[in-house]
Image (cartoon, rainbow, N blue to C red; front, top):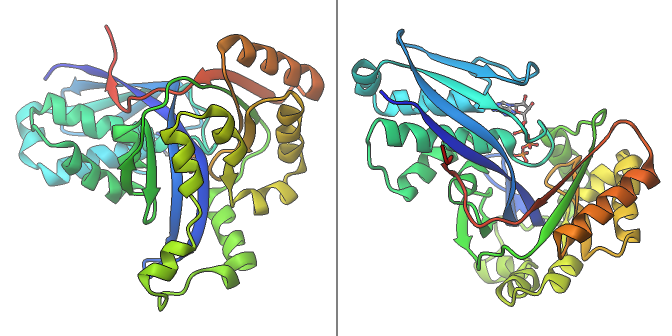
Length: 315
Ligand code: ATP
């Protein structure tokens, strides 16, 4: 078996609306997801024993079945039981650059890379649809991470409608090293506070569709209108996260004060992102916010929209 190295990019949410509860316990969502150039590198190496092992440059990451990359490999071994006998065991080497538990889907993207990588080195020839169906078993964001670009995601986030690919916008990401927000906490708190506004399962399809408000954002994307996209950024989870973590709200306000197209928390946070129109503007905004907040726990990255999901690294 040969080794393969894949690029596993992060995502941001341009739009996240919580529509209601689902019988499976997840939330019904309407999201617009966007791949950005900040990425991890995942290398899959052959090893001499019939096992799955994880090696990473981040000591805080689990190296057992609780690592999403491990779970993706275990799922592939379960689906294709002959492959390990034929090709031997697998070492997954994770070179992390995407901050962990940050609302940027780093773990989901790593899992997506393992699915794509094993399909390649085991020569399975799976279609993107087949890979995404497997990905949905691991996590709601995994199918999007496989295809990437710009997409409307509905259901629990796994039903994807590709939108026009945008690659003309730049993103400044910022995160406090000492603040972590648990995704289950964010959704559970939202449910406690806002479930009275959820659609009910008895609502017919028409009234359900009338309750989804992602249309203007989708239209702005189809027109490649960066200014409008910035104005229409929306994330329901800010309603629970920002009051609980005022530093995250201050960070978002600091970006807005710089005259960016728009700024918002990504996913369940705590990463905040700002949209701007050029690399030079991204660098200026990043420096200005760094100086204004003046906190040694603040980390910043400048990155940009990209139109590809998981892909092979250039050697
Ligand atoms: P999302 O935006 O999908 O909610 P996230 O960016 O908030 O994801 P991740 O970085 O994917 O969060 O990590 C969430 C949790 O998953 C962390 O507690 C982390 O320890 C665990 N985890 C498991 N595998 C990985 C992985 N390969 N990379 C990052 N985190 C992982």
